Image 1 (cartoon, helix red, strand yellow):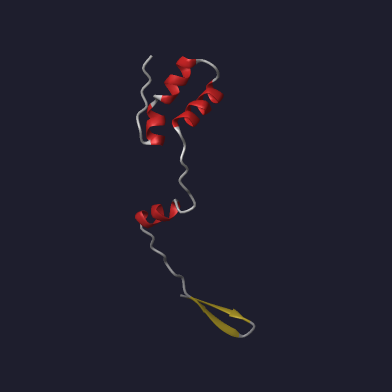
Image 2 (cartoon, one colour):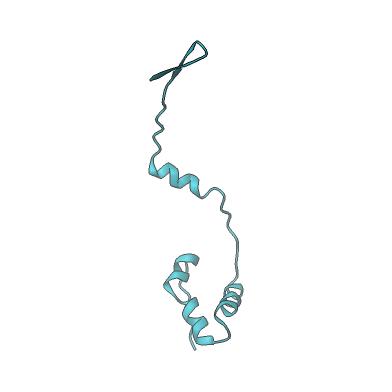
Length: 79
């Protein structure tokens, strides 16, 4: 506790320590996010726009580990 003076008045300042657990900080982090439904065709079209017109590269992007983590599904192309 610290004391300061302002024009003859004594003001007491008390510091508050806020203990935030990691779990509650993470829980509040995703509040602004919203779920969007995307079809498989939308994902493939976006991959073609990003990579270009090469089918092999699109298949690599769609079946990558990062895409599986992002979508929650493992996409396999048979060709």
